[in-house]
Image (cartoon, rainbow, N blue to C red; front, side):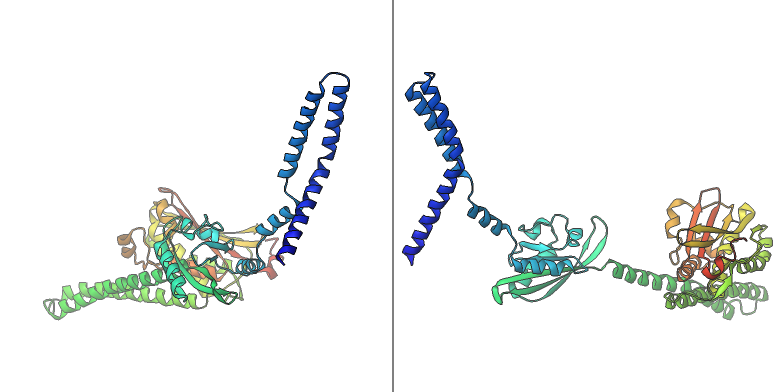
Length: 438
């Protein structure tokens, strides 16, 4: 058996040299004819012609011996070709919705999907994972999972390129049914949205408790005073009762806003399907707030089309939206002595929209506050807001109502030049054609 293998190897080498000699045959023939001619005409001596031909022949043979044979090229291609098992693994993890990395037992990267580059852009096959992912907790969990051969989870926090929380699930996967063929699969889940919701919930409970505790403390204090030192003082009783009434109304508004916000969030996925006239709603809100406007010395200028503008919506919720926006303009923009309330139609790529704008001419809002105005309990000026009877939930409620109605809220403001709140709602398609002439 050994002899036959040796003979087969010798035969292959001989065949290989035969093919190489055939490739340089033309070079040898031309060079031989050239040096023979030079010797015949006397340009070169026979020795010089022989040496020259020998040098050319040697160079051609060396070049031929350096060329890879067909078999070696084929073997090289086979070496760089991925194993079918690796192709299957790569095909499987490429279909995963989360970043995934497959590693050797010694933490060498075997393969990964495209989403993994979002977690670790420096990932490279054949390189240690620590070159691309430097979190000590993850690397330690990876080592422990490899040692014990059990599934592990680890959460970690990153600040670059942005603050985010991630969870890494590390699970051994057996290959070929042997421990030696064991690989490690790492799958990453982005926990940032869940963590932010948890933080928002905690902040909401803390803020709501604080907002309720303040009027409760005032009520308790005045009750103790009326039961004690001011028991027989009619003037103090009248003054304290008026303050207690204001505090009780403040608590009632806060509870009402909290309940409204909770109801809207519960049915946020249910879009209203009732067609209502937006012009009638906005005009009703303007008429209802005329008394407040006169008390504050503010004129409400109305610019509305003469015809209907139908949208799919909940009447009570949309009334609440425009009441909040106009009341805010009357409370915080009263120094401008004027509010412009207008409705118009705009055509977009997605269809016709009803555009309602509420513009005041008050002090305006600083740019750093604009992105956060629709957050719950966020106030530009806490003292001013409480003095005006605000709960800090009005614009949050507006945002959630509009989201349920497939609408949008935008805000433009310049310090000293007032602010403009703009609501955009899709016009009901069944009525859009009939209203084109309006």
